[in-house]
Amino acid sequence: MSSPFRALRSRNYRLFFIGQGISLIGTWMTRLATAWLVYRLTDSAFLLGLVTFASQAPSIILPPLAGVWLDRWDRHKVLVWTQVLSMAQSLAMAALTLSDTITMPWIVALTLFQGLVSAVEIPTRQASVVRMIDDRADLSNAIALNSSNFNATRLVGPAIAGPVVAAVGEGYCFLIDGLSYIAVIWGLLSMRLAPDTRPTERRDLRTELRDGWSYITQSTPIRTLLIFLGLVGVMSAPYGSLTPILAGRTLGGDAHTLGLLMAASGVGALACAVRLVLRKSVVGLVRAAAVAIVLFGTGCALLGVSRHIWLSMALMTVTGYGLMFQVVATNTIVQTIVDDDKRGRVMSFYTIALAGSGPIGSLLGGTLASRIGVETTYMVSGAACLVSALWFWRQLPAIRVAMRPRYVELGILPGN
Image (cartoon, helix red, strand yellow):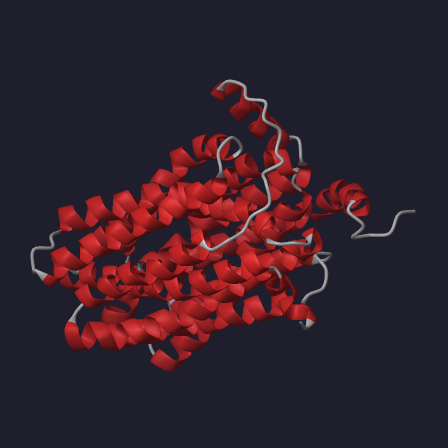
């Protein structure tokens, strides 16, 4: 097994990687289909932002509680049940859409339900990877491979969904997504996992929440990285939620155009994933994350100016690369330096920064776009991300000093 794929030597991780890859194709098809369905029914920037808000709002409140539960419960069983519930949600969307009874209240309600499931599933998945691999040294490679999986399907899913929506409607995308969960559920049930060796001591919920929060706030690298991730999550949210209007109104296109734009973003994100897979060390990732957001902010601002599909696709490739680099770099660094007994709680706060910031940004972006226009909103979003990157750049010296002892302890850097 060559170095870029070394985590796939672990049977359990290999099963998860394959099953998740199949399932994610359906997930990306559903994302495009939902966005286009809302745009087709309402032609409203505000309602697009509202649906995105509903999908991510539970990630503001639920992850800290989920993090405590994950440090107590069997994460593998939780992960299986989240996949089953997600499958049920997609099949319900398919039934309503194919029967032509879908309405905005149904869309918001089912999207909110999926948001509740995702608020538990995301930290569970992040905290479970370390148990799927046989060699702890392969953890950073497994995280990078997860990203490549996520972004390869981000390219394939919309490329399939666009023609499917144009030919037979959104309902069949939801149906394909629902059936695709069978693959990841099968993979999870086929795993042979070693016994869980985490401490069995249990304290009350408030004490464990407070301990997790104190651990994060006292760690300069984790605290600063999560703040930066949350800031960019808020500022960049219009980039994702307003893409259907950018495709349909600004560029004068249709579902095919939306598929092309999302696929272009997926190409950039996939290139980022490949770049990270080829890295042999986490050293240097912090600085690279700041540079990546400079790329994203610049590309996002220019999207507000572009009126040509090919230029917009090129810019989407740049922004897809930059935004995904920050997300994966933050995940890799945090997962590398966090203590195992705090992993569930720390990754729950990572989920808040990643997914919980989106609802606020989407709601603000939708409101802003309805007042100043989609194009200007993209420019404001890009500029705000550039300011966030400047702030983070100024924190780099303190982060490096705080991280060095942990890297030496883990053998990533040589001792003095």
